[in-house]
Every structure is written in structure tokens, then in C-alpha cells.
Length: 178
Image (cartoon, rainbow, N blue to C red; front, side, top):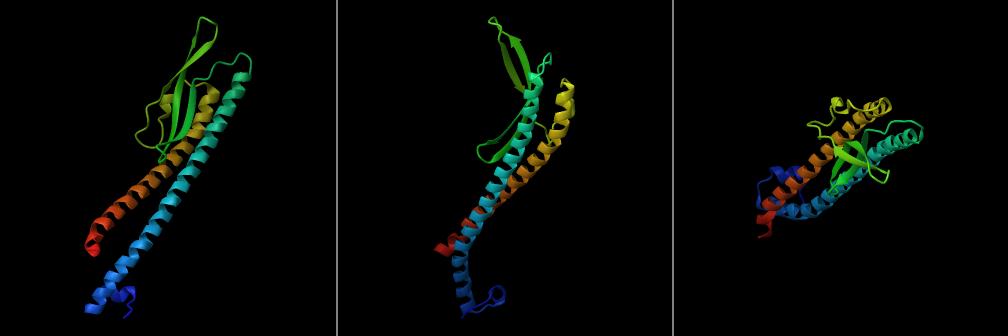
């Protein structure tokens, strides 16, 4: 006898009990497909966040390069980098540059990354030493980075939740396999 989902949750006869086990076995395949679709969507969203963040960083570096090409312009103090860490974690970071002249007349750059924020946004006091044009760009880009970090954190939550659900499902379905 065929039962719909509502009947599977309410009927108490032996046929319904057998139908519930069949449903659970068939549901496992459907669940694996749904889980794969969710994870593919999470990965696609993360790549979109990375591209959006990289576009912001590109704009910063394009302006940075233009400023360096002007005569008598001070060397920029700050820089930024956007990347994926371990293929699953979005990172948009700021660093501070220090310049040292070497004996050969070349300039070496030493970078120190700013401490990561407790929330999603860097404290603007971290950029007190920024040149005017840098600060203007940082004030524009950092709130955008913060939104990207927040989106990426939500995706991480989804990824972890799917993994927890799958572990619970696997552990609870072992009885069905017996």
C-alpha cells in the first residue's frame, strides 16, 4: 500500500511501519542529492564573494599605482589582500607598509598585517597613519569588505549546519541498515 507523507506520520499499522522504512531508504539518496546541491550553492556564493572582494582590492591597488606614478607623492602606508583560506574561508585583510632604503639605493617594503577585527569590520583608528587619499579609499572599501565577511560567515554557518545534520542523519540511520 502507498502512503503519502502525512499518512506515514500518523498511521500505526504494520504496512505503514514497512512503508516508513522504505521511505527512509529512498530518502537517503534524495538527501545526498540535496546536500550536494546546497554545498555547490555555498561554494558558488563563496566564489562570488571572493570576486567581489577582489574587485574592491583591484580598485584600491589601481588608485595606489596611480598615486605612486605622480611626482613627489609620499609612499602609501596601507595595502589590502583578498583570498580564500583553505578553500572555504573568505579573508579580506589590511596591512601596513614600512619602507627601508637598502645600500644599493633600492627600497625594501616590509608589511605588517593589522589585527583582525572581533566583528566583521576593522576599527578605523587602525588607519590613523593613512595618507588622505588612502583613508578616503579605506573608508569606502572597508564597509564593503565587512558586508562580504558577514556573508561569508553566514555561508560557513550553513556549511557547518549541513555537516552536523548529515552526521546526525548518518548516526540515526545506522539502525535502518541492520
